[in-house]
Length: 146
Ligand SMILES: Nc1nc2c(ncn2[C@@H]2O[C@H](COP(=O)(O)OP(=O)(O)OP(=O)(O)O)[C@@H](O)[C@H]2O)c(=O)[nH]1
Ligand SMILES: [Mg+2]
Picture (cartoon, rainbow, N blue to C red):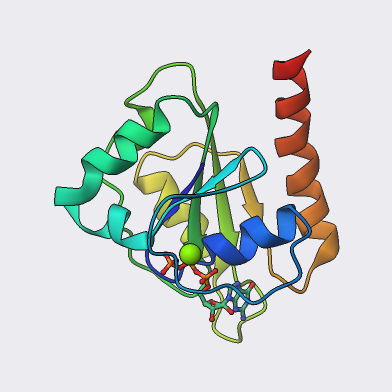
């Protein structure tokens, strides 16, 4: 399940993970791709919509918090990703290709917001970084279905 602010790069990431070669459109509702779940940034950015996220998260094994490398603010409420015990939490820093990307600063920011990692730094134009993330996510899927 991908969670993060509006325009963080969630849909672009999900498309890349599942080999969908198309430009991301604005996400309007919860959407599935394979066993991945995409969520609209609005669900994360507006606290009155948190219930939709939390409800949808119940059955997902991994929560992937997505944050752009050029944004040095974070709306993540303390403990939000730890509400359900037993879920794996992964942080992905997207758009590392941007000229003003500051992935190390963003990682420190996310740490300060209670995310302990693992952290993955990716860009839609960096297949090696995407593959490393894909290996981790698909690896967990396979463990579960065995
Ligand atoms: N430069 C750069 N732009 C990116 C990257 N990933 C996504 N984008 C752009 O960022 C914008 C937002 O991407 P989306 O994938 O739609 O973001 P989202 O998190 O799904 O947004 P919502 O659906 O509104 O929540 C789009 O214009 C993408 O083309 C990246 O790695 N590098
Ligand atoms: Mg989207």
